Image 1 (cartoon, rainbow, N blue to C red):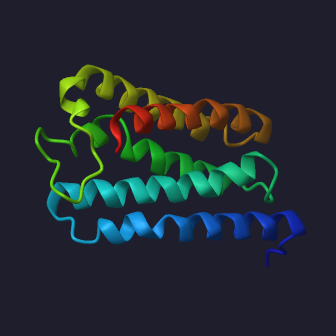
Image 2: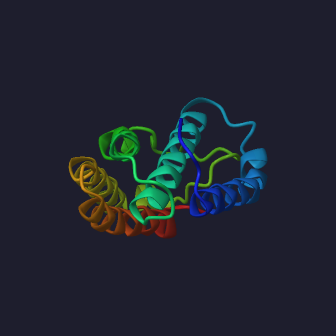
Amino acid sequence: MRILTLPSIAALALVGGIALLGTSGAMAQAGAEGVVKERIESMKAMKTAMKIAGPMVNGVMTYDADEVKKAAEAIAAGTGEALTKMFPEGSTDGESDALPEIWSEWSRFEGLAKDTETKAKVLAAFSGEQSKAAAAFDALEPSCKACHRAFKD
């Protein structure tokens, strides 16, 4: 049985609040189909994994190396080639937040997807030691954000 400490409870409240803020976007994407729906679900899974790993590596919640490793592996599985395959040219139906720059700057998009995969794999590899995992997470997070800033509406 796990006992939640005050910082753990605060982190859970923060994650819950962030989740509530994100529901308006989820409602707008409820009608997505096909590859757009697939990538929305993949992004949600990676977002959840980041919310698990982040508080742990940063000492806000009790560190669990196995959970951090699982989260990192989930992120790695959704990035790189797996991610780029979910963006066939022109897949920007009304439910997609993907910007057309993905296809006009494909090599940059592909590079960011691969960089994120590599950094997620590093996090998985260093998950056994919190300080190394924290440094790996600190490298991973900006990689995710760089892609979102460039290619997400």
